[in-house]
Amino acid sequence: MTELEKCKNGEYYNCHDKVFLEFKSNARVLLKQYHSLTYDQKEEKTMILSRLFGRIGENVSVGQPFICDYGRNIYLGNNVSVNMNCTFVDYNKIEIGDHVLIASNVQLYTATHPVELSQRLTPDWKPESEEYFCRTYALPIKIGNGCWLGGGVIVLPGVTIGNGCVIGAGECSNKRYSR
Figure: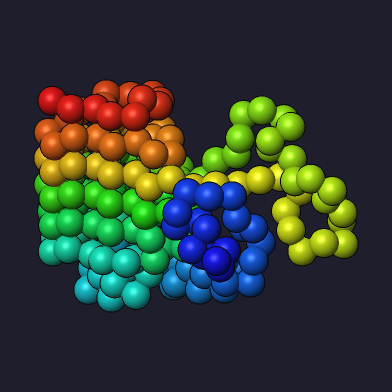
């Protein structure tokens, strides 16, 4: 099984594998281009986002600055507004439905590490190895249609937010939210 397959399956994987470094490199180039555009260059912004994201629906706005790791794992529906200063750690899939509002400073994290120290550290790790010194895994995030994530919300790996939910502010760490 490849490191990419392990990542997509929510298993421990080497986040420093060449494939992930290439994803990051591509995303950094596209984000640099995106951030060089002015507010009113909407057509150019949409073109870059369509190259960066896995899918982008109609009538989507992503405020600047915006940070993501790969971009390719972000899927946006129609009528989505992502305000400024948001961070999407998209090691696994981030799926955002239609008619979704995401306020400033929202953070969506698909990547994480085991809580227990004995599980978190990579056994027999050596600095010269190509592996990371600790174990990483990633779980998808899904945000349903008609949701609103308020300022500063943090959504952790594996969280699903059901249709129509409002997360007012702060951390969103439970597995499921529904209306």
